[in-house]
View 1 (tube, rainbow, N blue to C red):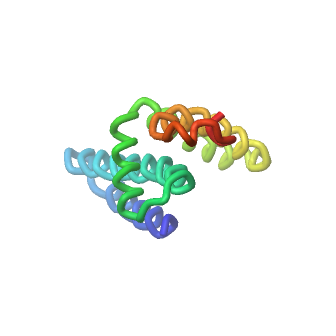
View 2 (cartoon, rainbow, N blue to C red; view 1 turned 90 degrees about the vertical axis):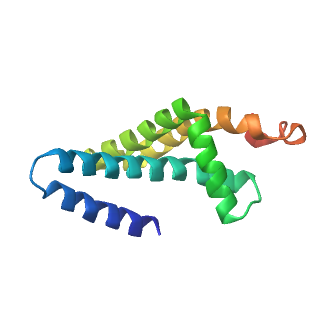
Amino acid sequence: LSLAGVAVFYANYIFTASMKAGGLQLFMTAVYGSMGFLALSLACYAFPVLSRCSMKCFAILRFSLELTVRHFPYTILMVIIVILSVTVMWYIPMTVFIVPAAGTVLFSFCMEKVLIRYTPESEKGKWYAE
């Protein structure tokens, strides 16, 4: 599903890039950039929420959207971490063995500060809440 979303996003981005320069091209680029940011930020929160909570799919997406808006500075930081990790791995292929681990550690520091606020008191002493 994620690959299909990336493929559709890329095809639409190529369509936008092929337009003549002008206001419509700028508008469409901003729209697709915003959609890409929203999709990436929802994915950043959806999988950790899925691992911690037992919710249905729509509830996970709704809670992820709420976290994206409520903790916007952390969201920007986590999206930057993901984009930088992917970019470094793209341009320096040998870092594929190191960068995912480093990116995940940095990502988890930010994510833990967000999710600990929504963890019940009985769960706060668990190994994943340290």
